[in-house]
Length: 92
View 1 (cartoon, rainbow, N blue to C red):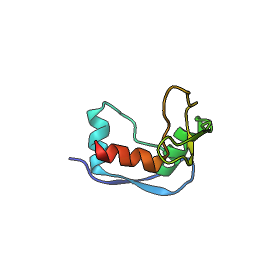
View 2: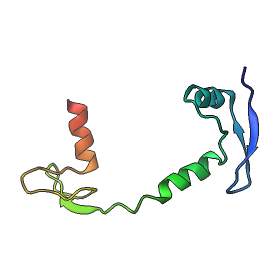
View 3: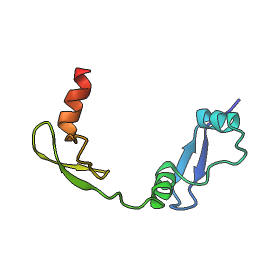
């Protein structure tokens, strides 16, 4: 049976708990090594490779407000701000 283990992050030096549930998950995936980094350092390392997303400005087809979107808007497709998009999804 698995028991919680306290490990030390190799990046920040902070202690973190490798829980019994995480150990079971690692074993079910065939991972043999324990994690070497805490969750925040793993997340930071994972996101470091990603560049900043380019954002585009568009006019919302619902309310006419300015909307910032992560894709280049096309003339033949409507673009909605987050509020109008959420209202449309709720109405479905």
